[in-house]
Amino acid sequence: MNDSVEKQSNQSKAVLVINCGSSSVKFALIDLMREELLITGLAECVNSLDTLLTWKVGKDKFTKALPEATLVDCLGEVIKVLPSDVEVIAVGHRVVHGGEAFTSSVKIDADVLEGLERCSNLAPLHNPAHIAGMRASQKVFPKLPQVAVFDTAFHQTIPPHAYLYAVPYSWYTEQGVRRYGFHGTSHRYVAGETARRLGKPLGETSLIIAHLGNGCSACAIEAGQSADTTMGITPLEGLVMGTRSGDVDPSIHAFISKSLGWSLDRVMTALNTESGLLGISGQSNDMRTLVSAMEAGDDRAKLAIEVFAYRLAKAIMGLTAALSKLDAIVFTGGIGENSHQVRARALEHLRVLGVQVDHELNAQNGDAEQGRISKEGSLLCLVVETNEELMIARETLAIIAL
Ligand code: ADP
Image (cartoon, rainbow, N blue to C red; front, side, top):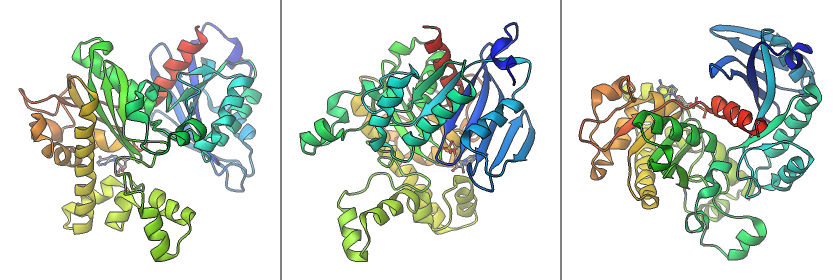
């Protein structure tokens, strides 16, 4: 790119979606007309001797070493690998935490950057990196509008009785301690796509969506809106995840700290990075690896999968409290979309809801029309692929069109 990205007009138009971490930046270019992914890529180990840019166009993969490249340098290199026959009209930034300040996507300006800084304490690993990414992107694409799309925003419709913890109220009013929820972009996309497949207006659709990737969360969608979700003030709460514990007795911190002589930080590291599927199995956080190990007779892998599936089912049951009806249970994310073993095990625990799995459809990740994995007459269970980049691109377009 070149100036052409900003100047040419009779080309197909696209949004560049950026997800900036502390030492990496993921990007994806989405064609808006065809809603198609044109290119994805990652710059990793930014600001180090090992800085590496990798990108994928269709099935072709490319890499370029960029030793000691800064974030601005990396984004400058990204420009060079974008297709020249596409006009980038905006940049959409994925933001993990918008606190209570951001209830929807916004065009990034000085006030927004300030607001993000104010809620950085809620996501100290993520938000400062996002802010750095926005500033770098503003430098590299000075003429393009930039939009922030928040993982938390979709959940701002959750009512107080579902978002408040039963702790001193001043923790909420003064420290912002409450359930925020995450994966909002995915839950929102999947809710819309499910309503489309059901042939219903989103506003009349009530669902439970299980987003099961490396991070996992379930969300109750009542009349198209998030009514409750399993993640909390941070993405540690709720379901069992790849390396995160999900729910534990809060006194586990003090118990382990006393019995092992660990600092609070050490306990938090264990709950975030040494727990979940990895913690129980003792071998991997990757569901594919664990399913293979279970099928080869590994008992700890089996146990990890069973805990994962049971806790998911229990959370789904809990979330029904937020709903007036339930049109479907929907699975998405890497595990949700691909692991028939996990889905079958979780749904086994939900027979009381009237769930009957169609094992043939489940084994093929759902029927061709809707992604259905349940029998006729059962509570409907579906597999729906998520597409967070597309949702961010749509949101970005909607905001710049305002
Ligand atoms: P992220 O949350 O990082 O976006 P993904 O949504 O890609 O992650 O999900 C990653 C998880 O999906 C991993 O645990 C991976 O093993 C699992 N997964 C991907 N494909 C399969 C599969 N065919 N069977 C079982 N698990 C799978």
